[in-house]
Length: 143
Image (cartoon, rainbow, N blue to C red; front, top):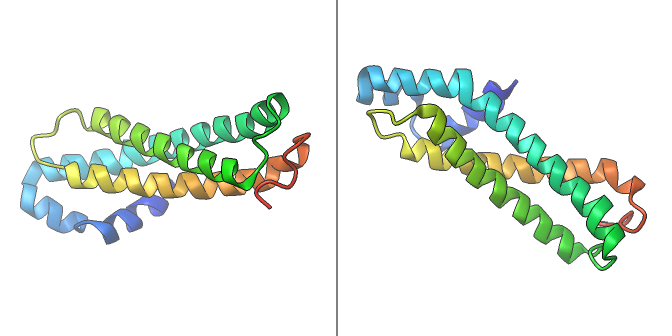
């Protein structure tokens, strides 16, 4: 599931894996294999976990405790914060998994971070639609 969600989007934004492997030989194959076997599943899991933590915090902690966070503005700020955190976590997690490859994969790192930040925003929106009904004050946030 993760492979199809990430791989097609990544290849449309950057260079195709075949060309990357052709340009970088064996190192390119190692980078592609790491992306397909390790990176996609881990960054997807981290995106969901971070998004769940922030959305539950928004609806059940901040709205209940402080009361003024149930506006659309604070929801958008939390959505952006979620995307930024997931993007940064994705970059460093992916860089750690690749473990200093000989070839330059920085373009793939930046694009996969951006892609995961977009997916995190989508996840946050969908999770918000589900869990907002249990919130004592934020039932109408985002709408």
